[in-house]
Amino acid sequence: MPPLLMIPNARDNAPNVNPVAEMPIDERPFRVRREGSHRAARIAPLTASLKDTLPPESRKGTRVAIRAFSGNIPGRPMSRTATPKAKKKGAKSSRARKADATVNGGDGLAANGSARLSSVIVDSYNLELRDSQGFVGDRASGRAFRKLLEDIRKVLRREDEDPLGDEPSAEISKSKLDKALAKGSPEAAGLVHGAIEDFAQELAHVTKRFLSTEEWAGTERIVVGGGMKESRIGELVVGRAAVLLKSCGIGIDMEMIGHHPDEAGLIGCAHLAPAWIYQGHDSILAVDVGGSNIRCGIVSVDVKRNRDLSKASVWKSELWRHRDDKPSRDEAMERLTGMLKDLIARAEKGARKLCPLIGIGVPGVILADGSIERGGQNLPGNWESSRFNLVHAIREAIPEIGEHETAVVVHNDAVVQGLSQIPFMQDVTHWGVLTIGTGLGNARFTNRAALEGRNDKAGSKAKKKS
Image 1: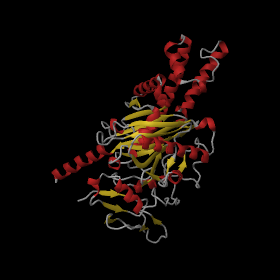
Image 2: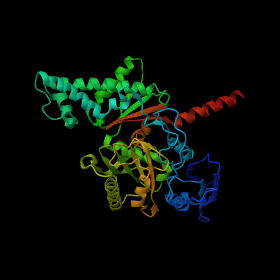
Image 3: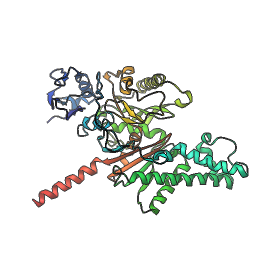
Image 4: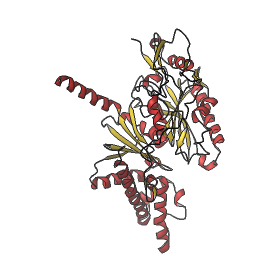
């Protein structure tokens, strides 16, 4: 039987949705219309484009299963219909959970913010835990570390000179702090050590709170990403937090993310799509949007030699520190799309075979139509506005890549950073990621291979008993 290309359905459970229609795409163009609705989804161009991405030997006889779709396809956003509020405050809302219905078993291109990807199930992300002091995650953010450092310096200044000088704590580079720790005076090293200890205590407390939630129950390993990865201080913080947790009887493995923090958010974008998408291509455009920087890059995937994307790497990238420029949202989008266009030109010059897909990691809760429900407060301008849609803005500026219509997949930035670790997390079933940046990003994953393998074994044992 020929392979099946799956197009996700944004409302599988809706009463008026026509279930699944299958037809050879070589035979005729088609339009799929939701019954009882005047809104049509233009499916034909996308399916033809996806089929064209396959090598010639794989195209013949390919069938396409189409479900009524109003999500991330050319021409039509998914409607933002109101639904009941999520039961647990801080978890994804019921509107955000609509992404769960837009998947197709992980064998096709999932919708924006989807809970089920080709290799993992995203159990939770952007979990907003609170205590008497506010959001728990704020206690283990990059800003929190700088504040702890400044508090210690203030105490020292009352009695003597500050061993780190007059430079504000928020502006001291990580390399300068590392140097003070390794080669500075005993007082300078002791000061930095004090900040490390205080911050490790906060990180351990925050981690403990996450592990106590239903969403994070059974987590076996936590990967820590974000800017602290590139410093010795970050390594000591994570190591000390792990020791503190184990001393409390919490035997969790904590480790730094494998890729450089500037690249993890780009490489993770490649895992937003299944490997077959990249057949006939060797690269993908990726975007990592943060509260301080926007980074765009070309990720080399090379699925012929590493289907699990374990050797994926950043070929070229561009960085813009938008926090210094304080742009409006429109100015930020203009700069972002300009960076992507520059990278497309460089890919053409470098004979790269770009997949017609752009993966994007952005802070906040991502709805199935690519809009941001909440959590984008640190971005330039209002990205949560109902009048703004990131997917549409990108596709309007870059309607085609090569000769194919552009597809865009958006997910939470902590999720995307975590996805870069998938090839190296196959020895556990449940794992999470914490990203220390402007805020503290979080996501929890379940490896589908481990989960489905366990279910297969359970099924085999049941058959033997019967």
